[in-house]
Amino acid sequence: MPTLVPARFLVRFCLSCPYVKSMPATGSAGPVGDLPESARLVAAPDLDGLTEFADVRVGWNELGLGVTAVVSGKKNPPAGDRDRPRSSDGLTLWIDTRDARAGHRATRYCHQFHLLAAGGGPDKDQPVFLQSKINRALLDAPLCDPKAVPFRGIRTRTGYRLDAFLPAAVLAGYDPDQHPRLGIFYAVRDQDLGDQTLTVPGEFPFSDDPSLWPVLELTK
Image: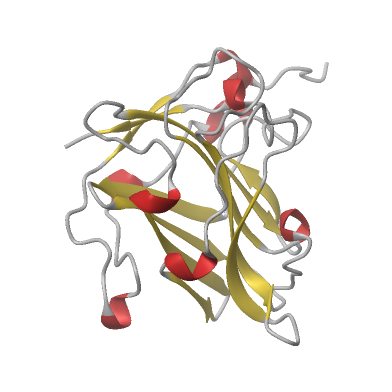
């Protein structure tokens, strides 16, 4: 008999986010550097019999949040279109700086960021970072200037790596001292490998319902 409800839908996850003093980084290390294994966002995919092709990590400090996504196992170059970010190869990250999961609609503290492996440049083959509004939001978070976010996308032999540092200035309500518990969700879309989400799959409205986002606890 098929399972109608994913096992992880029945679990309320609280994930730990480590303190990383060295962000933002400079030089060949990219804007984030190498985040530790403790920064990896893993929410028991084995409960639903899943294996993950993307390694997604998040670290924090007083200046903001650093995120990396490493995708491996691809056979074709990444493809995308910055005008259709949710259909492009890359990572979409949702952050609620106040973890207000009582409601089903986003507030001005809820953000949607796209780290795309392709879709930028005149030929749409360059990595690109952008932010977009959340559907059905009660209030929209301010849209940042993408140039204010240090971002790097590089291709590897079997995939790609995406790095971004989200400064506090682009995260409305970011206050680690007073609000160390955030809401978080991610979806990795890849035309070769499929979709990978933090918990519930695409049949659930995670893109506009913050009540489905796990807690990210900023630890130090």
